[in-house]
Length: 361
Image 1 (cartoon, one colour):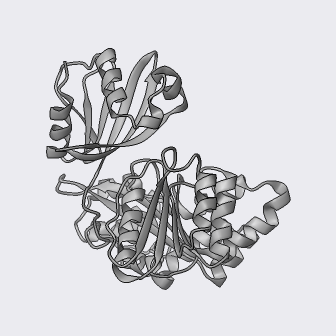
Image 2: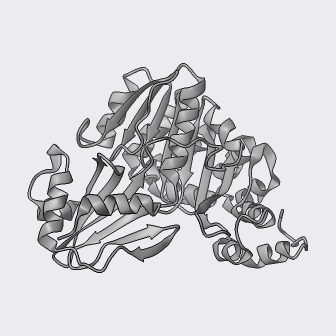
């Protein structure tokens, strides 16, 4: 039998970002981006199912097999190990669960070593800011740090709509309402409709996952609210492409105009293992809104948009520019930089101290 509480504590002590549990397999931890086996004993399917059922919130305690087929995303707090974001599922008839460790203390933008331009974006008090990246790239943590900065500085009403809630905010200057889809509201759409009637200044949307949520986010930003959301995309230009692809043809012109006018920033990130092997740092690409960005978005000139963000205007930067900076500062290795570069050839040339033609690096 697996001692799950001991496993949770082991994960925290190892500074694991995730715990992977699957019936018939030994537990696995993700530590600094790599997978590490946590003991040799396999987790039994029945004991894992029982553990998951004990962890589920009341509104999810139906038939496990049927519910897991839809996807079970929820938060769980252990008295000792702290808070986790959990995703339970079925795999070849056996139960499985991935648990993401969430820090109790919300880190600051400085703690996360994020570019200072992100502070300006957080305190802009306007527009739509999208934080993008793959699963596990730290999007939620970056957003939590930005909301905490607002909470520290501004007397505003903040509403977050999440599935599930990850970081819980302690009120400082802001009045904060956190809505969890499933337990506090039936859907993102309903929660956002409710949020817009509750006199918010700032709205955080856990994920832009469908056209209706996108439509509501654009409407909120267009009417003067500051809106934050995440998107699963790799780079700024790809984010624009993904959002445009969500637009129905009949609404394409109107929604594209709303996006171009309301966009405050796109912050894309990737976590890179550090040179000392003791952690990971976020490599950040930043696109800021403004007349030039609006023009390129409306005209669909995404290649030009990628070149434009390398200008450095208003704190903008490309992934490769940030990777080069981190190599020069000896935070990451050149090998890791090239592995994660958008244009490895150009970055390799820049690392040799040669300005690459056609690049702003």
